[in-house]
Image (cartoon, rainbow, N blue to C red; front, top):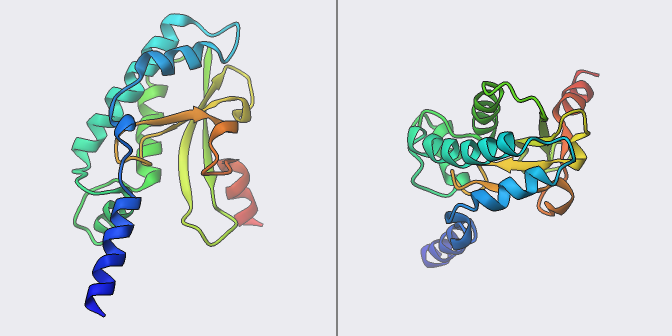
Length: 174
């Protein structure tokens, strides 16, 4: 029985690992994707946001003392063994850092996935052209790979169905 448990634990850990390509920052790729959000996106602002998103995610990884895949780190946070590192911590901190840049051509949105099913709820930041809906934006998710930034257009993020955080919170209040 113990052997089966150990085998399942190993499979779980491998499945939760960080893909090797996610460990290599693609700052220029993110910058290009941000610029492509719309004609009014400032290229310098896009470059700054791309750089900060990668750098700050790695800084948070260090501050949160991340040494494990996200779900294991969550367990450590919930047990008081790590100071922070739940998905909403990452989202709160990245959002605050980017808001501190006083963005002029880009908007930040907060989103939640899995609020209406049995999977673990997940929070993130979404970046869009100023005034555009979050569905046309880019997911900035530092939690997913434990501080190695995941990003993708919302429509291409097949792992999660994102809803505006305000909508999720409003439905809970009803």
